[in-house]
Length: 367
Image 1 (cartoon, helix red, strand yellow):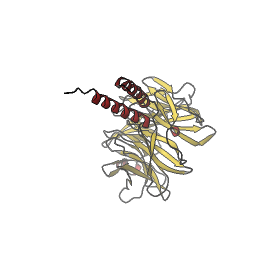
Image 2: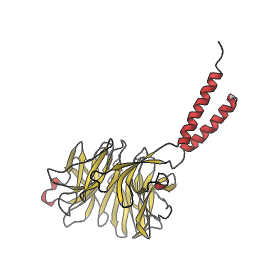
Image 3: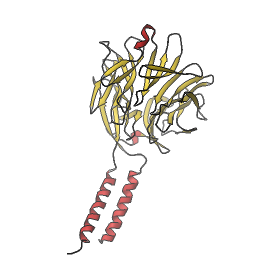
Image 4: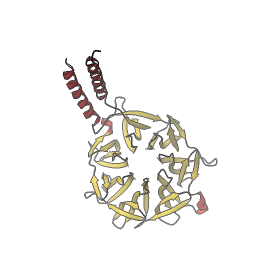
């Protein structure tokens, strides 16, 4: 084969490789994060460094964990008080937030950072409100909701000991996510139903609903570009995920038999993950990925030969790593999905490099 023909073949191989790398839905390897005591576990969020926050069960009691460097560890307790807790989010700076229940029936927001666990409502004293911390950004701004005795729940933002009530246009409100610019999303009750909101520069903006799912909506996440992912529904078990992008709400559609779809997380590339449910069998659920206008069952992109099902996707970072719940049968584990390159692409690139090297040797002038 002449070098000209070889180079032509190499270009074809390289073009095929590029096409493989440009595929909108890469395959993933599954990493089982395990559990500490053998009970079910779930991964709720992942940051840029691959640290994961979530929960596991210990003797049927829910406990919060931080997964870091291949090790899952319990975040601990407060002053000897055994806590039931769930870690819901983790920032790139390593802040972990969630809720804990040191007393039966009461939930309180917590912040865990640099080995220290803090009860955020302890300063309120005996009349402290119940609540949950849903998210935290790198600056340590925590968002969620507080529910004072004899009052309704309100969305809040907490930072360095200061609480800000975001208010509500109706009965109550709840904040689910905050980005690095301090924009906050959640849901608030209106006379016409509960709607997704965006809180920006002191103003709570009603995001509305999808045209065919007008009963209520919720905004679960916002990226640093101001894009919002959430869920708009028409009834008890009928709804679609949405992407809200600067005034435009887009229906993400459905996949397979999973006609109710809930979006949970969006990264800075606009990739969205969440969960699909069967309308007539809501306990049957599959995780999905939405990317560049295409929604796909994540179980189509992993090896399920061992019977494992990826059930819920709750978080995705900018590297495309996804976390959630997976399992075989009723056994549920915290799992992580990591994108892997197509072997054919890597092989073609290697072949092209060898061809160029061979041609360079052949064309070397004689001295």
